[in-house]
Length: 623
Image (cartoon, rainbow, N blue to C red; front, side, top):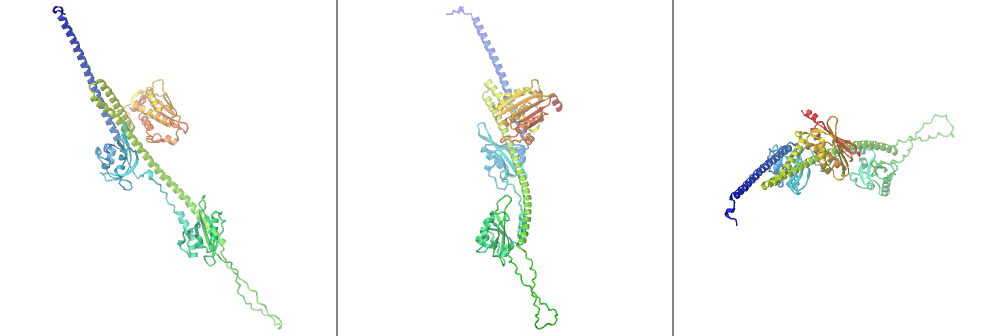
């Protein structure tokens, strides 16, 4: 036991005081450190909130600047967004559409033929069921002006990360006189000139004309034939032999008609009938067929049979005897003269009538062929014009589809970014007592906000040509920093070669725009290869201080027509593509003061060249 005299209480109290001081100092340091972290976390939360608000503002301004009516609905079909063009198209004031359903926000939604469109068949309703609607046309009445207009709607579903439909987006464009391409039928102008001419020649002929089918059925009969045989138009559709041949002549007549189908022109045997006229009718047969096609009809030309003319004796002329000397009673008297016959009257032979008929038919046929050629030319022009209209409608539908796809992609990207930001902010509020976790969540939310800001900056640059974020950077460093992403974009089947300058290559560009342009050019080259081939990316410095970026592929190449339109927005030669990659690169080249060109030939690959000016020249040009 310690004795009371053995304890140095002064020393004990001094140690206790020292330990208490150390604990107090440590507590003070910990409090100051935690207060600094709390202030830093609050600042990060404020920066994230400001970035999110700025991104939302820029997105709203960009979508309002697009001249196409864009709307977005939630799962219940209510509008949650509508840009300025949508409000103007539907006759509503700003923000008046928000909260309304599509079928109640307007009135008079009908098909082009006037039939009402059921609400469940509207594009937004179909998009909420997971369908993609392209170029659906209907009549829309503006409730403010009561003006009816034909609109074309492209709608797409909006899905979350789990593939569930959470809403729909649609692009609405007013059209003028367009019809649905799927049901468009070009109208070929009727050709009536040749038919009228044939009908006039047929009815004005002086011979009996009958047109029969290959089976001997009467198709046409001119007035001369009907009058000669005492028939009416009831003979149309009846058998020729029954109507125009005698009972004993029908079997032979049918055989002659069947033989005429296979006979050469001018070699068909004729038919002699005792019916018609006083002495019967002689029928000549002429095959009818279109050029290059088999005989499908026969033309029978009949003329009355004229019997051989009987030479009638001429009247006997009594001659007065000449005065003669008296003769003896035995002298005989002068005998009367022999009768003299007059020439027979002129008879129109069947050959002359046949020649006349053949001439008339040949003239009519020549006229018909000329009229047919003219009609075919007119029909070809009409068909070409109709196909051009169909192609124009298809192009408009493809553009609407691309606009809808662009809108859906932008909405999906921003939904993903906002989901990350809101989730991070929510977790930060729940775990405010864990500074390290709050810092990680704040960094994730800030990165999402920065990506949203970059996306809105890219959209603004594409639609308005803005260049507010341009800065002088080394293009070689930018290209090398993108190498990993470019190789991932190319995939394992594509041999990607990247070559950059050894020295600095400064240019004044927007880094986000530069990265997007390079990725667009490489993606276009990779898609042209179809998964196998090589792509060469080369960046070189020019003598004037500028740089030139070339992307060459070993794909199928491109023709002159494709190269002329490749830089147009929404133009694409691949199914399912948006047609915006090269247009985005072209817009970046313009806003950076450079140029984008495409060269190549079919079967020899293609090369895209992006030229950017020197940083000093760019600054002087901007000034």
